[in-house]
Structure formats: C-alpha cells, structure tokens
Image (tube, rainbow, N blue to C red; front, side, top):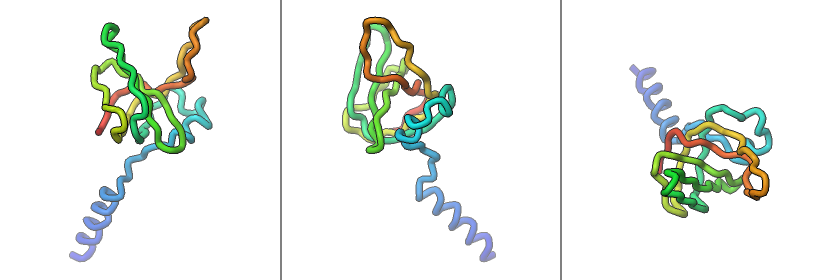
Length: 115
C-alpha cells in the first residue's frame, strides 16, 4: 500500500513541477536546422502583437528571457501584450521577400496555446 501512495506522490509532484517539455527560445535559435519543421513548445511573455484582420492572419512575439520568437496564427486569437503564454507549434523558416526587411528569420506556426 505504501508503494501506491509513493507513486501517486511522485506523479503529483511531476505535475506540480510543470514538466511541460518546453524548450528555451535560445536553444531553438542556436540550432534552428535541428528544430526546422518539428513541433516545439515554448512559453514566455507576449512582447509584441501584430493584427492583420483583413487577411485573417495574426502574429505575436514571445520573450522567455533567453530570446524572442514570432508566433504566426490564422486562428483569430491573439493574447494581450504582457500576458504569459505557452505555445505549441511547428518551427518554420520565413521566406525572404525581396525589398521587404523583416527582423525575423524563423517563426512558430501556432497549433495550440494556453494562457
């Protein structure tokens, strides 16, 4: 019976500790080819929001204190600036458009988000 309680305690502790398999943005940016077209999870604070309602496209930037990355979405839901979010999505390379200077080289295409 003690073993059962021990395992429930361990499982509960893992849940409380937030073993969420998030990846630091710095790690992703240091090895972008490894993460390219793979699912990843990042969390941090929303530092910038870009709404383009006419195109039904939105983007927001997450800062986790190790780096920043843009999150692209067509879901129509953008978190407010300074809110804490956890995002799961596919890490992708931004296509370069001649004569358009955009600071980002990579982004995450949103699949799921938790506020």
